[in-house]
Length: 84
Image 1 (cartoon, rainbow, N blue to C red):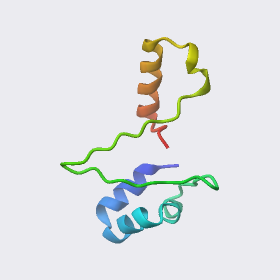
Image 2 (cartoon, rainbow, N blue to C red; image 1 turned 90 degrees about the horizontal axis):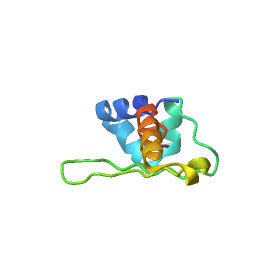
Image 3 (tube, rainbow, N blue to C red; image 1 turned 60 degrees about the vertical axis):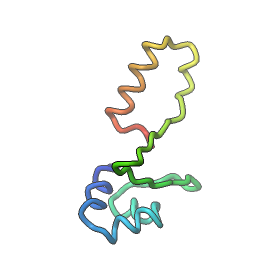
Image 4 (cartoon, one colour; image 1 turned 120 degrees about the vertical axis):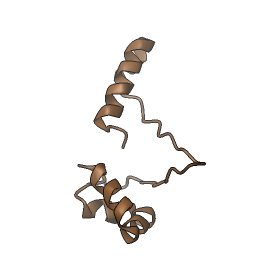
């Protein structure tokens, strides 16, 4: 699964960008990204005035982790792209 392909294509192809915003499931399928059935996908675009932060669902084992361990886990998830 590669969201990078979708992002790169949206930067290059205005029609694909419009489809990604209006039909995320279909547009993502075009680049080989499978979205689980029933999952909702929302596409937002950052610009100079608007920035979006995606807060991923916490993994189930985080309840007993220290703040430092949570920061390490969050950093790893962001580096790996585990935010969808």
